[in-house]
Length: 423
RNA sequence: GUGACCGUAGCUCAAUUGGUUAGAGCACUGGACUGUGGCUCCAGGGGUUGAGGGUUCAAUUCCCUUCGGUCACCCCA
Image (cartoon, rainbow, N blue to C red; front, side, top):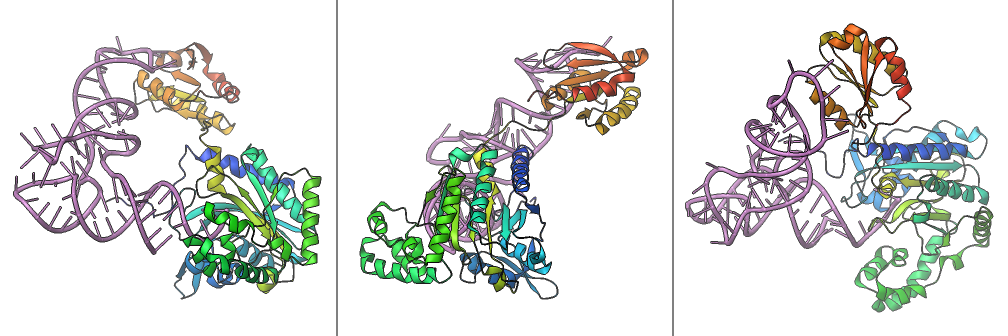
């Protein structure tokens, strides 16, 4: 039996790759316009980094990590997200001496051992952005603005919803959690079975329940926004004022509770209704204190991750596959050896050229050019060679004219600006 | 980790209550058509029916196990 791809991983085939290129290019363009610099990080780290950086109580660390021992017996883990690695690099290379905020972005595959599902894979891809060393609320707003600009650049903005929330300072969440328990416990009879389970494991999750029966109870639950310290509340107010100043449309969602332990104050998510159960396309928040927790300087930070698979899914099928604009068809070896050089010349100058090898009959070669989606074919046989000419055929119309072999490379380069027809 | 549905050619799908050599379209290769594609026609290559086991005279079909896919839960990007 031939070997197949491992469960939960997949190939991004040529038909899909142009969409990925488009998404990645948009991310780079937008991020760099905001002054972010790319950093490229290793795909695996010491296991301890993630245990400390993500939180040992999180699902990610408890059951989703690809962890193994290398040959020296060291426990290493394929990164389940990028923030921990990026902060490790920030600390390791002394980025704290640079002008604040230090703006960094990275992109690439992440790994989580989960059951595959629509929009969810074991190897998936994120674009990750972090602004380090600055607590000003304008940074929060600017980061969010940049995220929305990314979606805008792809024409997806109106199909997405931005939710923002504040979950307060480090002490707020445990206190709020207790408050929620006090509220829900006496009312557990009114909740669905799942929510009763959630109440044990993670009371904040009850707020996310979509079961209609639970809604009345949930709606009257205490809001985390009422549990904020005055500092946190003021920070949130100012973030909102900055967002408003930029005209960014958002919803305040007090039930937005993100899964990672390290978030404080501002959190946000970009949601879609088009992807089934996987409704989060991007998410992020502020994580003041995390860098210190990783034995780094006491620098605050805020960032987000975009799920690239989900963005590509939203983009749908595009037709923009790279196709050769011109297919060269030599008939026989003499013509082939002449076209070999001409093709190389034109390609070095950027023309998209495909060269047949003269092994098929002309009808087959033309058929091949047609299927490749070429805009033009160039036919050179003994007759043309004798005259020092080539036949340049426009595939769509079937019109053709003779061009001198001498100037053929120039001609091909000139054609390069025109598009081939889609197959 | 839990549950439901589904695995037949590269792709999309057939195959009677279990019945002989598992078919078709598309794609691929060649030909009809000495050097002019998209249309048509003909021929050819290509399958351990996901894998393993069981029931049966006989399994693509029924049962079990396993792997994979899809969707949902959980959780998240």
